Length: 436
Image (cartoon, rainbow, N blue to C red; front, side):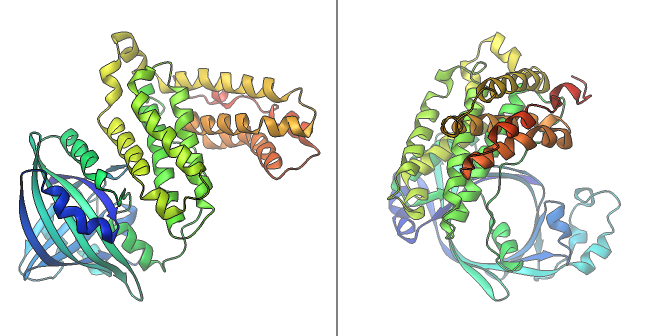
């Protein structure tokens, strides 16, 4: 087993042509393009997908390799997953050759093998460079080809950075230098994820609301902060993809994701010094300004240097815990405290603020003026409420969400009744029964 650490970028064809010239700035070894064919396997009920696994056979130069990627972690475009590789003499699936301990307990390997069938494939040329950067070796691979499943296919232009030896921090810093050439954006979707989408009929990806962020009841404040910001980044990147595929309504969800990040920084700002995130927050502000310009379309915005630098800076900040360098012992201790206790305090403040904001409002224009405050506070609740029973959270949220919708659609009657309904439910953070 190895732990694969990769950073994936989607590239424009124009950027791909400039890649070799850009990489000449660092000591490197070049490898000429080779044809790679990958066939991905799955059961008829997507059992591997439900286990968060991916299984493929790769063929290159008449040599074959079976690879299983197990459940891992993706932050931004940084993918970290356990990977198991087995050399094959011919392209025939034989999962019995994989370590038995990788499968869930009581898995019938022979029965699973009998159910596995080719689901989709990727065909591409891979050109590679082994680059020396800092104290690390980083493989840069440019893949040009297609992902195909049945009658559906889509072009593939990807640049992948894989840490071969050294430090993850070096790879992230190298990426920051590489993206300056333009025409790259972070890719949160793997080739396998794109293949599954095609295999399921390539249906349009829906607009999603930000879900309640589930987190263990005994999580630390720091874990809660990472969870909140990672969720916002995932929301951003998912809807960036939807926007690029032609759904203009997804732009509003991208804006919501940036607002969610702003709320996360506000929630945890008393524990993490502002100077620890000042450069990152400046990049995010520039991204908000870019989105505010109605003349910028999805392609211009998502492949802009402003956008990719902001996402990469946030990824770097999260995976390397860059705030730690700015903390004193007291702040470190607070971040290791109970996230649920922190949430109890913050949710009480949010509830009091919502009550104070809306309880005496009478005029429709006043409701409109306070809509932004309501939106921000409800985003904050989503980020804080993950350690409580979802049904209790939803009961408390229902009235406020109905008020939010009514203001949004410019309903000018019955708003005070909605406020009275919203403030009635008991606080779920006092009634959850979860030990602190």
